[in-house]
Length: 340
Image (tube, rainbow, N blue to C red; front, side, top):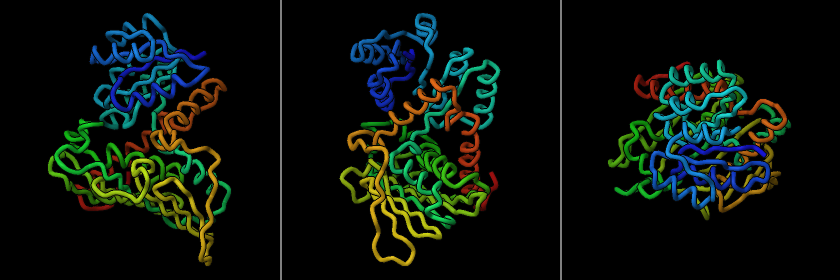
């Protein structure tokens, strides 16, 4: 039984809580948040101890895994306070506030012999696990290009994001730093290291501090080009526009692979008129965020810890995502391609 502490109890943390609580091989031994009332309410709902602060929780429970679901400004201090040989720390993305801070935090974790991983869950969505398997099996041949059109339709009007994640309104960097980073990680995982970045970003909703639309073009070491076209005000024709948050089209030597807003994956061989549905090996939970990707990521980490294997999403590897994110904003500012 793995002992788990959860730090940060806001909107997205609830998805983590549900995933941990559903496991038979893990036990939530404590929760904490700066908001005392939220800590008490969460502790009551989960029937677990709630603590006034992180040091109290660590001293009382000595967890095996600490799941940090807090904003980036808090990451470095929380991670440093949690370091212990043999412990696993899971940190919500985007990791820290800068590349320098992320590198220093990683260095501290490695020195303390603490395993540090990033909760980057989009690659664990069931349709993307199938895309990865499709590519690894060589069914696309050479991959020419990939495009994802982000269209969640949740960013309109003066009340945009207030009901779910109000901090989105005041973030100076929104589309790429908060959302596009998922696809930087996804495309890097699917197509290899990023060698060039070009971005053209804009703000449509005037109540926001940061950008909510734009295009990001990534060139990968193997020659594939991936495009992230984001517009948070437009939607996708789906029962739930936030299930996939958009549509993907991947073109290669053998044909075209497409994902629609309902999570259906189709492959049309080159020269054919009709596309066939590609069955998913992992089931879709239509009521869960990203088809159940939070639980899938947590399952991956538990299995890695149990088996002594290295997780996909280590903090060390994630530094490449931060470099590409920084390059996107520099590209926009300088109006040119950037080598991250």
